[in-house]
Image 1 (tube, rainbow, N blue to C red):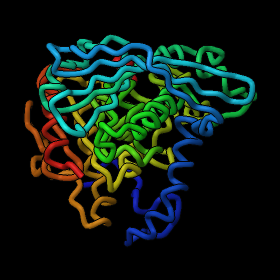
Image 2: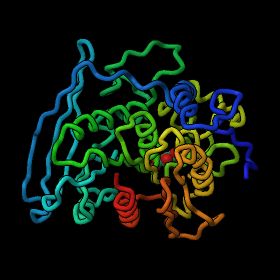
Image 3: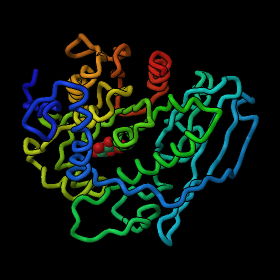
Image 4: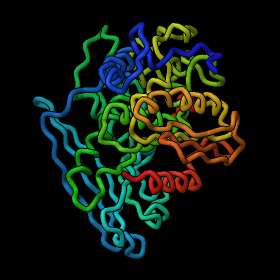
Length: 355
Ligand code: GCU
């Protein structure tokens, strides 16, 4: 099973292997700190001030099947303030719908990665924001939200951009949990690719997300790193060093020295629901390594008496769907993309596993 010499998540940062839920929960914080320190950088503290303002409301959205809202979140730290927009589409015909919080590439509603009408027809609300409205996808840490958190040079565990986008998702969640029209016990944070990595990291840090969905997140997302095909730590930290903290770079070509692997990230979501989607031809992300990660994280779900991934097939064929376990998985045919087909599978998983 463990041909790739993956570290045992049940060993955590200790030498002993945990056998109970209690031991795992005692260790969980140390593991979260480990990933913060070595990979993504520590999330900033909660904001000192936080407010939400409704900017726009459209009652007849999608032939009156939904209400569209545009909001502005304002966060304050010391003297500084920052605002970013986010959006809500809430179906009118459903009482307390479950909801997605989609960390999106763009701030379009709808968007080709976010088929709002189908989501509403499925009975779900969808909240979203465009990630670059929070802080740009580059190495400029004076831009947007990043400017709120001064950075001492030489610190190697400062938040990378993934941590900042995840932090912003948690602020939108602050808004969602304040709403009486949403089933706040059933909110799924979701993202694709770099934003799939972000959704997983937000889900690991914030237990209010009952569901966490990663679409084609690959390297430094759902896929285990040891023995991975396609993108490696050297590639990702050369092209996108600013997504991570500086410590992560020391593992270039030294994957085997990482004191964890990406299945630890998935395990931090236990016992909540997790869904991972791969695309058959997305070899840069590496579907086999994403699936393996789900299998390896499952042992933590078992400590809770839950089944993690239920997937009897070693290498599932394209369009195979495995929604039964607390970790759901499907592999779509085709290339790197977030499709309507994927959204339909996510909606089925939420309906099946609603809290
Ligand atoms: C690049 C990057 C991936 C990332 C992807 C994306 O391909 O190497 O790690 O997931 O961009 O976000 O689209």
